[in-house]
Length: 324
Length: 62
Image 1 (cartoon, rainbow over the protein chains, first blue to last red):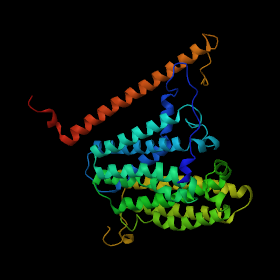
Image 2 (image 1 turned 90 degrees about the vertical axis):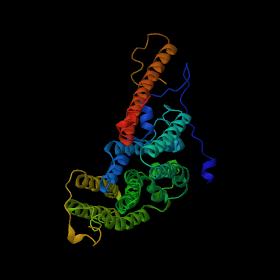
Image 3 (image 1 turned 135 degrees about the vertical axis):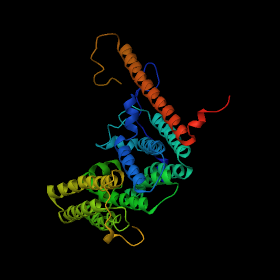
Image 4 (image 1 turned 90 degrees about the horizontal axis):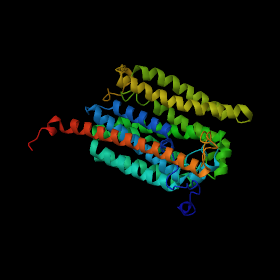
């Protein structure tokens, strides 16, 4: 953990004549990483609808809100810790801390307050299993991923990806008081999706990560090894995306769309693996990165439609006996 | 800390006064956002209390 000792966010906003925070309300919202929050709410909502639960909609809504705020809080803690990295990356240098709109200490206090508030709220509204799981998720993202793995190993996003994969399980715990196979599969889908997704981005943005000193796989092992790893992870990821079908919670629509998107994912990844030179290689990686976002969204949207809108039609011939 | 759009009234008051005015405007925005968030939280906790404990929670002897 030597990386922790030499870290000190440098950016500070200019002091005002009056003193106090110079931030606007929107700057605090930006600290919560709203787009990541949306993904967390979306995947957690799917986690809630695929499990059998009789929980009241208001309790489910409050639980979802607590999970979302917990995710946002971990985003604020991540931005506090990574302000030095964010300042040198084109994608992140306009974030509130490196841009000088929010002081690092403010972001830390904001993140910690919301973390504690979200965990306590989930505990009181739902149950303490879910609250403990949410606390662990925040700790995993802010400490294990941000403070430790991100600067220490090219496997950072592989292990750290678990933090982004936990929300459906936290939601399951919130509405059922336990953990089921359905949300374990959703966890596995997001967990295995993360490496191809981020490494496709890293292939295009490797200069940015290198400048920031973040050991992403293309900088450490080279683009060819990254392409091989993307392909290998995809070979595991694609069958897992189809697991809801034999386990009985992916219906007819999921079977058709899940199968088609699985083939598309394999095709795009194979192209990234094969095309290694010039603009075409960058385009292939960019295309894969874009598709991974769409792929995950489609899979979860189909599950949401099947279980939330009553579109579920079983495919008994494909279901393992006992899971129907 | 002048931002885009904040220097449109350049010439009105000293730079310090304009800075103080911008600061007050941002503080007012933060206060309103905080008030809305707290009001929403009160409403949410009220609704959850009624759902979890039932309307009988309001029906008790003094």
